[in-house]
Length: 89
Image (cartoon, rainbow, N blue to C red; front, top):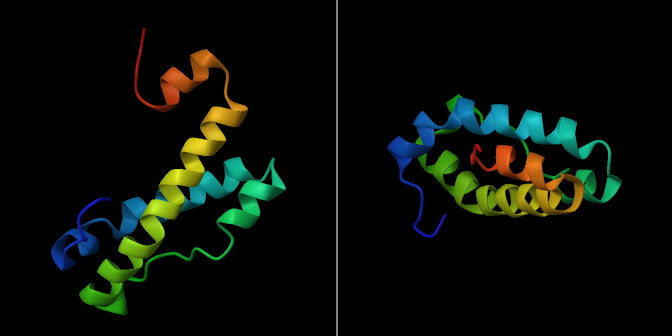
């Protein structure tokens, strides 16, 4: 997330972000250090207002992404890594 998230984009991504956060929290439950790393992240609230959503995505998105990548590197096999990042052989 190199550029700031716009308001319209943030509103459009609320459900996706929340679904990803839920999925990763389930995955991270096997390793307390990962679970702790994202324990402060909260679901986006649709009624929070566009600028608040954009700000939250700008702040939380990179943390969630970096933690997910670290989890993939540490806990997944080479084959599972390919699947997790979208490469299919």
